[in-house]
Image (tube, rainbow, N blue to C red; front, side, top):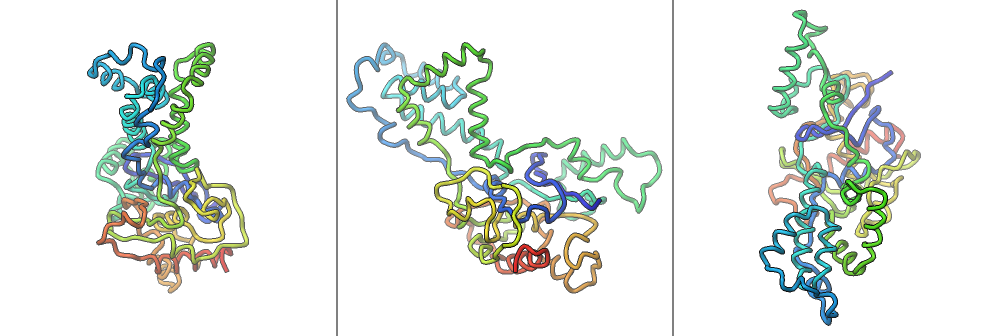
Amino acid sequence: MGQYFMFLNLTRREAGGYGGKFGEDFGCNYNAVAKNLSKPTFPTKPPKEVASFPNAHRSHLGLLASVPTELIDIIFGFLFVPQHVAHFAAAHPLLGSQGFSRIVRIRAEILGGITWHCSRVVLVGDYLWRAQNVDGLLPDDLRTDMVALGEELQTGEEGPDDRDPFSLYDFARTHFRGVKYNDVGPLSALQNIEDKLVRAGLSWAQLRTANRMDRTDSMRVDRMLSSSQPTLPPCHTSVLCNMTKRQCVRAQVLRRVRLDGYYGNTKTGDGDDSDSDEDQNPHPSSLSIGLTVFFLTVCSDDWCFIPPYDGKEDDPLFKEMRTVVGKWAGDSLGVFGPEDVEQDMVDVSEEVAHIVGKFLQEEGYSK
């Protein structure tokens, strides 16, 4: 049957973004994975058309202008849906800046529960039988919980080869939460959550009424919602940083590794106007950060899935592969724009591109 793998967030105990044998669908760019590891950036100031609304008609003001500022603050504080905040802010031209700031805070909080930025991640194989023996792989709290569960399951007899009572792969299947953020990307996930918040608790009739209300001040509402959207580093210039080992890999170097000959399923996730056409192509012609993450974080006790495919650790090719493959398993990773990379990061782009490119060549993905 072969070995199967699962992409895990060890910090948040979430799983998603890759499931299957190592090497399947490697013709995809997995940009959604890179985007979900990215640091989102929010605008700090609203655009002029949101901050002020010159020449407002008197009917826009109503009695709201006489409401005390403290009460306005309380009302904003009780609104947790960006669309609701935008509609309330659109009711008075003086509420634009406050509404904009409230939407940014709400979206930042929601995105904090979506992105895996600076989380500890691993692509774990179901043949990793001794996860607790891998240095630096497991966070202390996860190790404690796995030991406790192992003691509950212990029958008094040691398993074959003194293996753990269960694997990290098995533990994750039952104790980690499955998420789709690495499949659709964080911005699409954010939009999906906002859409659900708008519909939450509404009957069909109430939802129809709400849809009619959406047309009220729609231009101002739409402008406020669009101008408060976060942005992510463009995939073609972003930098993958290992916050644990203080190393980094640059997308511009990885893109020198050309891919051809195989096309898998779409794994791009949400697009970005700042991304190149190549980044938005589900079947890219060059190596991406998203795909590279899997090579760097893969972990197993059976390495027969990498060249020379026999698991012989004394083989020169195997030793060369292992200088890169799996060396970041369990580390804290984040994707940044080049201007945000900390100065003490050691650039290992060339060696990573060389080894991953060599693997892809062995697999027939690259010439």
